Length: 96
Length: 455
Image 1 (spheres, rainbow over the protein chains, first blue to last red):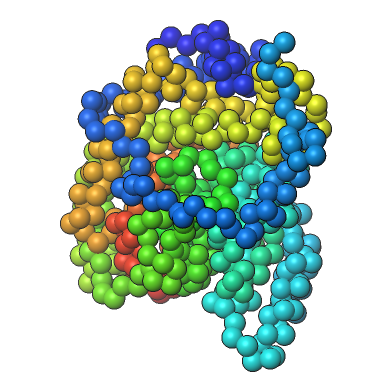
Image 2 (tube, each protein chain N blue to C red; image 1 turned 180 degrees about the vertical axis):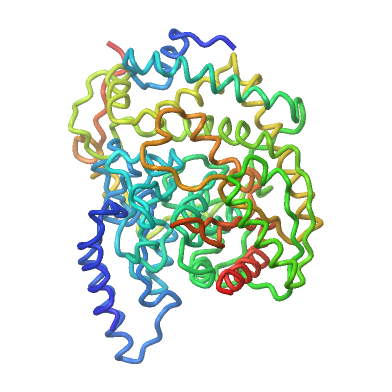
């Protein structure tokens, strides 16, 4: 399949990963080789059952109850925020 | 007694780890305090847990409360784990002594530990060679004699590859046997935590301590409670050898494998050759699954929630992209982009949809063989360890090295690596695969292989 530098750049934008020109050039070449090799999946299972999980376990939910340690855990989670205002995380604006 | 031994081990790490690079952080103070506590309990005649006194290293992708959880990445350089992983809770409850966090390929992306953002770990058998990956620090810690047992995580061979390269034992348990609560996920449908050790006995001891249902990990829903998981089997499991396991394998490894097969035959084991043609497609199926799940898992690392990055972000789209671009390594970026690509609306059916269907086929084919035979046997890796830096340039070449280990993850079955024979300085690993929750038969054959190796 056709892989172009613009396609790689677009994937970078969608992924929120900024790439240098050198990385774009390298990934363009590598992706063409990888997809060439990976196209062999066409040969098996096309159109058959899709397997997401191997366990077969469904709807295994824990009781919805407060846990004694939860408050301590929450404080430690807040402590990891890069920028915060009290117990709130400060996030950058998404619109100008 | 425990205190004295742990102090000696810590001294050894201080003296020798500069040459190996197994640890990202050593928990000296906590390890000595725990050892002292065990000595006091023993003196008072109190009962000790199953792991009493064992020095344990944990891969730095597993949360230990109050300690840095870097996942081998600069992205999480200052992230402090807010709670203990389920496996850490169980180690602590069983009186294991956690001595430090082990180095790894960044976010578990790699097969040789040269993709850590901090430093490359070296193979204790020969420091010019890689230890395997991505749990290379865990394997090196055990092989160098720094730890009795280590925990790794295995998404496509990340326990078995380094176990094989470092000449030790490792097992990836059945998917869902061990809780992943507190494990930073790489690919949620494939990840599993497991032990690396110097013997099958120690690996089994650790697995008995950490296995069991946990309400915080839905994948464990079909697993018995801790302490009720069957890990023993008496008798000789029947053995199948898939001929595809030996195609393209290093001749010296194949020779050791045939020697093992002959020895098992002489001991009365029934060994049959089988063919599983879909194994030839295991690498594309595995990597395409990983790319999709990994790109999704990595979206949470945006520079806002997981540790201070030293940068103030003003614009959500551009600044987050720039931060991730500068903090993540090339292999991680490569996988994120590939995962984004195959899950876009335009390409989803052509790539990800077909991958899921192909995975159903390979799982069915492996299960059909394991429905007839007790275990599958083959080499763990088709190559010996390579020199540091040798496979950095070509990602496809690196991915292809995982051909023998990824099938077990795709099928969710247990698979172990046990050293057998010797090739120069290295001891190649032999891989034993069992059916889901068939760890008993896997351990039985691992112990037999160890016995034959000592002969």
